[in-house]
Amino acid sequence: MVVRINVEDEAAIELSNIDVTVYGDSIEFSVDGTISEVPDEILTELSGEQLSPVEISFRQK
Image (cartoon, rainbow, N blue to C red; front, side):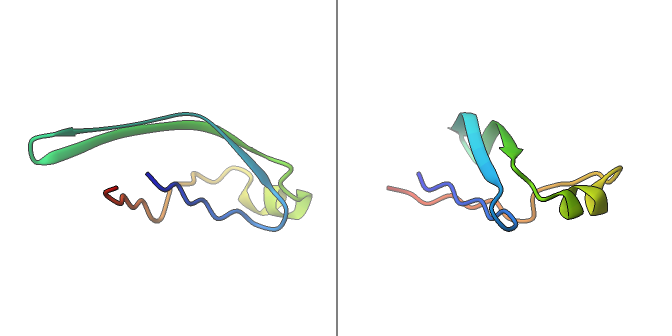
């Protein structure tokens, strides 16, 4: 599986858990992790905002 995460500038991402399971005609997944070293100006801009992923893709091996 390929996991691609784009973060601004030199932020660092650490994924602690990735789980993907296929049940019939559906895909269930969960991802836990932390993005750190985010520049202060980006944190200020996003403060108080709810964020969500804009793209999730899966590739079969």
